[in-house]
Image (tube, rainbow, N blue to C red; front, side, top):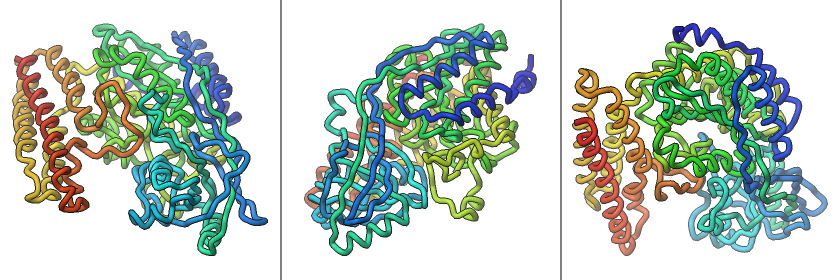
Length: 573
């Protein structure tokens, strides 16, 4: 059976049925999430698909009601997950510290505010009011400044739910000190403007938050579709099932996409060379990716040895989402997914570096990755509608609100997006040689090093890093040339391509050691030498410390690049 015949097997019967069902109940509390998981399992088993249901215990924070009061006025509010409980009320002086609104997903989740020492002096002992989402970056910074509470002014008339901890997944003992210790809420923009006037008048406010926090039994369905030639090797396709409110565009459409791909590939499993592993995550919204992090921890060694790629499915099939722009992908996957998108959707893909968001819980293992958010609306349409940046729903500002209802999903776009995901996964599973080009990553490294050197000037020399990256690129050119000529057998080539991910993904996307999880804040490219861009901010007395950090960071980077080069030569012959 050809690829086109497998794609033609896709229908909207099951996926749209799931979306219509999910549009009728909230999936925030673990009990409701488990209900949703049971429905996914039931629909799969109806088609004969074998499902394993894991039952991890996850530490979650579930927001309840919230408000802000000032005098005789009460303002509607929503607390982010991991706010502390302040149901008895927390009162204090209100201080406004302004910031620009977010213009992309990075500035949604990772923000810096205020003007240094002046902002810290104003924030200390106060309830801080600022612009943006109640994000980890905002809450962490104001807590460090000594604020006793935070109020985030969302950009529109709706209030967006979110999560304010920088901890990725269930905390371990080393993570616990970063657990937020202050209450936080979000308000809409009109109420935020009123609160700004209260702050400017020197007024006080009281924050109320009701939070539920603890360990919860959670269901996590997994479908393992065995390949016929290399069943131990697999593509991991996944997305979150828990949502804010009914969460149709984020992420019922993604759950439906996984459901249909599981049904189609199970029915055609005899056409798979490698296996496909599909999982639905709990604890995404209320546990900062707790479900995918549990899976990464539980199956870490198996993932290290056998996972050839991880593919995240979040917010496909949303209305007006005609384009594939701002598409998360690692550089080595770019040409591959661009070809599939052009073939299935007739669109030109515009990829970008994956953000420290979504369920990218596998970077520290070192796995090549593509997709996070899916298709989105064109920038011109977003501007025409007066929309601001959000983190899902195809760009619809219903994201993380009560308005993410059935009308956000689009049948035609969903059908197209299911086929994009299906063909990408199918080709990754069936490629004779894994379709990832590490030469693109080496070029990315060289561009990063060049830009960092331009910022550092004569204060630090990144020539060793540049030389190591050039050496790796030269070795990769030779390697891919020999693969194309048949001089390197496919099995050996695939081992090299997979192993390179274990070396090069962590050095480009992580600061923590392997098998740990970095905080949920932006990680710059080649983070061990990223301080090269910050030397202007260090006074003469601190410059030496920054240069010392660069020496150590460059050593780590050069070692990794040389290790990758040696590995290519040793394994490929």
